[in-house]
Image 1 (cartoon, one colour):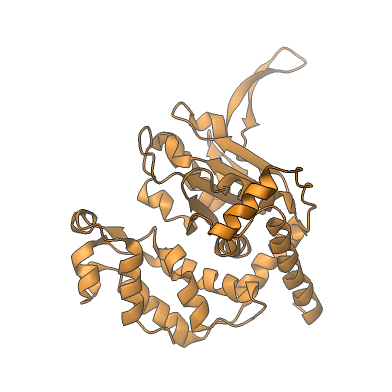
Image 2 (cartoon, rainbow, N blue to C red; image 1 turned 60 degrees about the horizontal axis):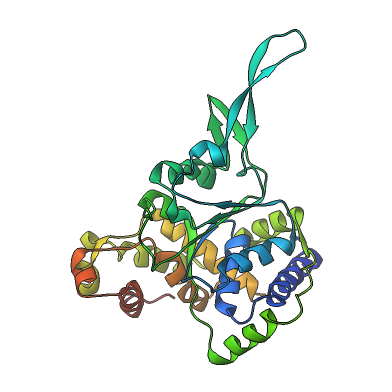
Length: 325
């Protein structure tokens, strides 16, 4: 890819971020991580209490891209066929009958799975193949999803009544787990002013599907030193209690991260470098993306939960013992 194409694409990233900021006040880190998930070609899980604009943030991101967007509100009565599609009995000109597959809302470029933990595991698991293989198998037939395909899911961490925890295999397929926190005082005042006055104009698209595919290809071409890859491998292995001597891991972790975590961390670090207009990964890129990449892949044990240990504390201790160089 020549310098002009690279410069054009990195300028598009800046335009995308600016477009989202037209609507969203603050949350700079969350916006950065959303964009990193997009350009790294992964899916994103957003978690935060109600009213923090998780859905608005995703809708703003979708409006800034000239792509098809679908939203599914996950509820306890939602069935797999409601999201995947189903076969419908049809009749031809000669009176013969046949089944035709009617595609569900997952056949889109950007899919918002709103409150994904409110639907039973049977329906949650219907997304597994889509997230990993970008296709759907139904009645022995394979149906490819539109490319690019980007799944963004939200969940509420405080209201657990009527919710169903996501299976670990599905959680692992999210490139990033982003937490959305409360705004600071100045940001909250700005939110109150913006949302109680004249409506904000709609966001104009700044990215096309071809741009996103090119950005995802460019992200994989970002250079990373072999020493950093080795450090990442050591970091991932150190999250496993049976492979480390770190007391914070052995005492409080039930299951460590798998190889997909290392792949995700490298891609996320490359995305962070590209977001900052650099074409080579630095140790700082890796450190910045460790928490959103690993917080959902390291499973704490009962001792950690009983002592109210937070995954952030465990990963911070891990990072202080493993040098990224």
